[in-house]
Length: 392
Ligand code: LMR
Image 1 (cartoon, rainbow, N blue to C red):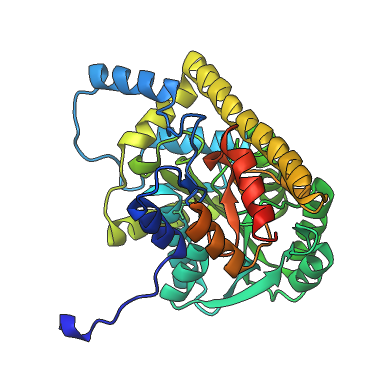
Image 2: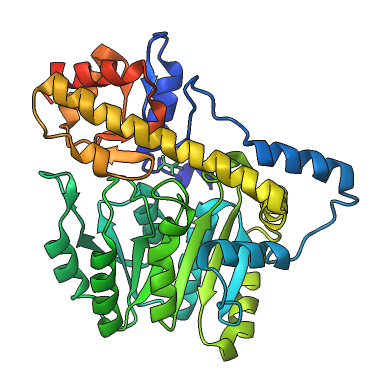
């Protein structure tokens, strides 16, 4: 049987991680995978997470199974964090292994409920979006999103492609901090996108993996909240990996908003899907998140540290844009300061990306996406100089 298997397409982000690990050069710089790093290169355990872990160790009496869709307290805390009050009667919720688990479960739900629907994704999008959609055999289409020349949005292309969406199609939107480009719609553009999608009868599917990394916890949820309030049905896949820094705990949530009268059936389907795929979801990270969000002191400490992380990335953006201005003697990289989240797509060619890696030991994804948090005050000028040297 196993001899029938053929190699699978490799995820370029994971390939890059492996290449970086194997590179013996001590001065190498990792701007690949989206993991936050502080100025010393460490991905720290957040203070509130450490405190909650200590409390949990002292208080936890059992490790028996949790609920099949996770704990109701986690559901309520996450719905409140993402959507605020007023959605409980519409929200079916399941804890999932990370944001990717939520994406996968949401797409399985689409496959069960509407197998012929087309799932629309931005061009470009996170490579694993298209990979999972194809893996599940769903139809896929792309809408224009990014203007590589300006480093900003192709708003006209975006709106005109969204106007082609058919009734019942699912439209995957990055709620904030677009991955891989870093370019995000303004509030005004979000409103126009929502108008068009509502007219088309589309089902929005929001991927919210970076809440708190862009303009702040509330601001980063604004587009998701707008969509939740405007559409009868919405899917939301959210991750706690980045904003709680608990990557390896695999903590995510799938929220399916629908008619209150259908909530019970949708909830049962989410639980069924969990059971078919992995049975009970991981609990440790979800429990820490619940403890933090429910405890005012822990929550305040978490928010303060998350804000430090966000501001650190903003400072790095600012100084990289300035260093690139000086190094290239042009303002063509000013978009880096306007982008939000962990990523910016720089618009370099694949050959330039390869030279940066091979000659300068600087690793970025092949499409020239950099992880801003992989930089620090020392490496910002090194990157800017190297970009100028490769002719960027
Ligand atoms: C990324 O885009 O680098 C992150 O979301 C990590 C991953 O799993 O790809």
